[in-house]
Length: 519
Image 1 (cartoon, helix red, strand yellow):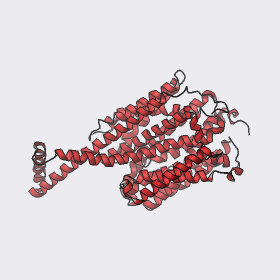
Image 2 (cartoon, helix red, strand yellow; image 1 turned 90 degrees about the vertical axis):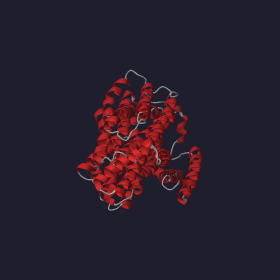
Image 3 (cartoon, helix red, strand yellow; image 1 turned 45 degrees about the vertical axis):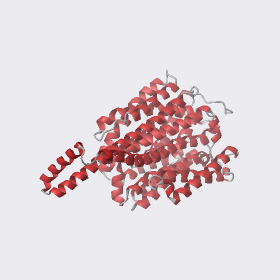
Image 4 (cartoon, helix red, strand yellow; image 1 turned 135 degrees about the horizontal axis):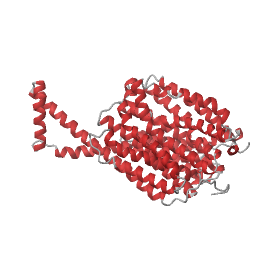
C-alpha cells in the first residue's frame, strides 16, 4: 500500500475528521449521563448505587478493549475495525435509549463502551501515520482538545438534552453521526491492510490475564467504597484475582515475543512520562467532572440543565485557549506549554478548596476557567510527547497503552474520590457534631429561631421543636459534605504537583518521527 502521508491533503484531512467524529462520540458518552443520572434513575426506578454503574460499566468495557485495539487493527485493518466499532456503538446507543430497567441499561452501556472503544486509540495512531512533521502538532492538538473537551462538555450537553426532551435522547443523539462515520470511513480511511493470519498467533493468554486484572481491579475500586472494602467476600475474591492476573500479565508482557500491549515502550523516557501524565490528567478531567455535578446536585439541589450550565465555562475557556495554544507552539517549546497547562490545571483544582454551600456558576468560574485553559495547554503536548517518541511500527500497540492510562486514571480517581466522600463525610460530621451540643449559645439560638418559625407556621410546639432539630441535622450534614468535597479537590490538586515534577524530566518534544529502530 502507498504511504498514506503522500495522499492529497484534503483526503487526509477528511479521513481524519471522520475518525475524530467517532472518537468524540465515544469519549463524550463516558460523561454525557453525569448530570442526568437523577432523571435516568427516576425513569428506570434505580437506586443511587445502581445508577453509578451506568457510567462504570461503560468505563470498564472501554478499559478492557482499548489495549487490544492495536492488535485488532493489525488483524482487520484500521478502517474496518473503526467501521465495525462505529456500527456497534450506534446500535448499542439505540438499545440504551430503549432500556426498560436498570439491569438492561447497565448491560447495554457495557456493550456500548466495548464496541465503541476501538474508535479512541485508532485516531491517535492514524494521526501520526497520516500527517508528517509540523502537521502532527496540529493533529495532536485537535485530538488532545477533543479528548479533554468531550468529558467536560458531556454533562453540559446531557443536561440540556434531558431538560429539553428526555434522557433517552442522550443515546439517540449518536445514531446519525454514527451512521455517517460507518458509511464514509470504509471509503476514505485507507492506511493499512488486514492480516487475518494474525488471528492464529494472537496473544490470547495476555488478553485473558489483562481482562482479569483490569476488570476485577475496576470492580474492586467501584464497589469497595459501598461494600466496606475487604469486609465483603466478593471484593476479597476480585482483589485476589486482580493481583494474580496483574502479576502474571506483567511477567507475560515483558517476556512474550508479541504481547497484546507493548509495555517495553515504557523504556522510552518520553513515552513513559507521557503515560504517567496521561494517567494524572485523566484523573483530573474525570474526577472534576464527577465531583462538580455531584456537589451541585447534593449540596445545591440543582437540576440537570442548571448543572450543565454551571459546567459550561470549562469548555468555553478551553475553546478560547485553543487558538492561543496553536499560535504558541510556533515559538515556544511544547514542554513549557505542557508545564504551563499542568500548573493551570492544578491551580484550577486547588481553587475549589474554599468551597461553600452557596457556590454556583459565578464562584465556579475562576477554577473552571483555569481548568479549561490547563486542559488545552497540557493534553496536546502530552499526546505529541508520548506517541511522537515512538517509531511508526510501535504506534498501534503503544497507543492502546497510552489511552488506557487516561481512562484508568479516571476510573481509579473516581473510585478513590467516592471513598473519600464516604470516609471524610463521616469524619467531618462527627467533628461538627462535637460542637453542636445542647447548652451551647449558638445551638440554643438556632433552635429558638427554628421553634419560633415552625411554631408560627404549624402552631404546634412539639412538631416545631422536632422540625428545628431536623433542620439542625441537615445543616450539619450539608457543611460536612461541603468540607468533604473541599478535601477531595485538595488531594486532586496535589496529584498535579507530581505531574509538574515529572514533566520537568521530559526530553524535548519534537514533531519529527524517530528512527525505525528507536527504543
